[in-house]
Image (cartoon, rainbow over all chains, first blue to last red):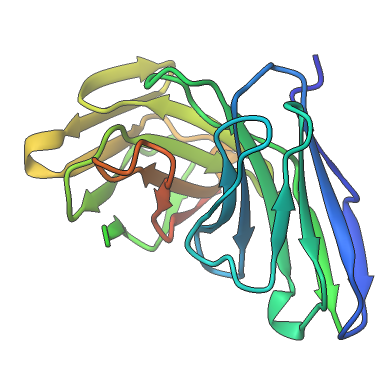
Amino acid sequence: NAGVTQTPKFRVLKTGQSMTLLCAQDMNHEYMYWYRQDPGMGLRLIHYSVGEGTTAKGEVPDGYNVSRLKKQNFLLGLESAAPSQTSVYFCASRGTSGTDTQYFGPGTRLTVL
Amino acid sequence: GIQVEQSPPDLILQEGANSTLRCNFSDSVNNLQWFHQNPWGQLINLFYIPSGTKQNGRLSATTVATERYSLLYISSSQTTDSGVYFCAAPPTGTGGFKTIFGAGTRLFVKA
């Protein structure tokens, strides 16, 4: 049981490049989330999904797209990276019970030059 | 939208000391969670506590939902307690999805 895993762990992009971050969970969770964490700040929700084939916008969705083609995977895409997207990205998942807690992946450190 | 405020922003403790971290939220919430982010960046869930009190070893948490605050108590602190503590809550009526995080309390425990 690996929990929540993220790929890659580190990435450096040039402005305008694109990339996809992969999140995978093996806990059969319905809900999955993508957050970004900037220095000295808490986590801000980018997008989330309440089940396979569904996605929804969070607090800071601009510049990102997501897909949930399989229940266990949640992909975060940057079509044209900008320096403002330099951040640490965390994926999380949880079950559907109101008492379920969120489990986080180890994070992806992204730098956009 | 809901505001989640944590205090103090920074805290330095001598090993063995006790501390209380506070989380205030501006609107009613479905639940309240506390997380610890260790110095390596890993986020660990500590408590799910929409109301009442829970204890886990040296840590305990209390949420008073009617007064919109939660407290995290750390007793006999250890250097491994260092890191950032976040509280997080989804506002009532959002379906519990859009969890809002506070800015965190950064704790450093000195040996």
